[in-house]
Image 1 (cartoon, rainbow, N blue to C red):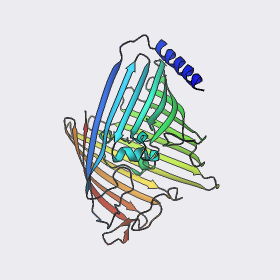
Image 2 (cartoon, rainbow, N blue to C red):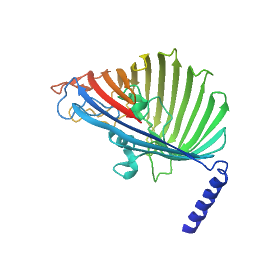
Image 3 (tube, rainbow, N blue to C red):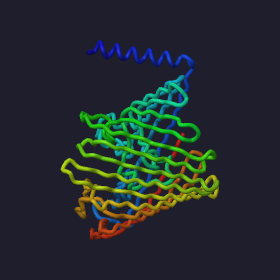
Image 4 (spheres, rainbow, N blue to C red):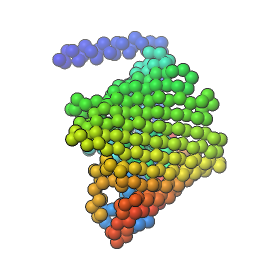
Amino acid sequence: MLKKVLTLSTAVAMFFAAHSQDSTKGTTTFTTSVDAYYRYDFNNAPGTTTNNITSFTNSKNSFELGMASVKIDHTIGKVAATVDLGFGRRASEFSYNDGTNSIAAVKQAYLSYAPSSKLKFTAGKWATHVGWELVDAYANRNYSMSYGFSEGPFFHTGLKADISLGGKSALMVGIANPTDFSTTTSQNKMAIAQFSTGTKNDKVKAYLNYQGGTDQAGSKLNQVDLVLNFLLSSKFGIVYDGTVQGIKYMSGAKSTWSSNALYLNYDPTSMFGLTLRGEYYNDQDGAKVSYTDPVTTITTWPKSIFATTLSGNLKFANLTIIPELRLDNSKEDYFAKKDGAATKSAASFILAATYKF
């Protein structure tokens, strides 16, 4: 068995070497970032209740490290490799299925081979194509995350092909492990795809995303996501991100959840910008049943919620300061007041900082 593995490894190495001889001088790029934040719960809920269930900011009245991240990209000829490591709350929640294993620090790790300018193959683990928001705080204008992002997917581990269709259009197709699993003993697999296009001047971009297949638990899952990005002027832009996921459980029961988010971006100067995010999240079927609040003992996500987030972006070279005000309103008495009584709304303030170099 070992002999076969060595033989295959040697053959793969020789193949890549043969196809990269047109360039013997590679390029390496380092991207490093760090972010931290302080979150205040205006409801001042008792005990450990934070009135927060979206990703990466589940704390209150505490200074927190978001993530320290180091990304290395190397390209030589037609082949490339990326290693992206993260440490902190964001990294551990991003790779939540990996637990405390060292692999949890690996946000992304993949190899690529481009036989032509119109085709590229990638194998490994990479951040999802689904949705608008990203795991790296510096890449988002809001610091807190949307419900749609928090529902996932976060990443995929598998094989994909990126195909240029000419102009601004491209297609990505692939096959991966069950969503958000770096490693698994399951035979189940997910199909992933993306069609992207845009205008020649890049003022309008569109992304139609998909994932579907059988998840780790054996349930049938299909998710469609649409992102539309409009650059109306040098100072104003609008982004829409709408996603819907349907699940058919092994018992035969079905459920659906959806998220529709609108981002209004305004940059009056190069040093200051504002982003208003409005999101309507709907889970009338109760697809999410994994969250349990330790005080109110609510065991499901809200069935319907509207969240409004206003974030400022104050830029000083590589440093961005993000003051953020957020209001979440649910149709049910889902959140907690100071005395522990249930209430329909929660308000919070975040002061965050990101630095990229």
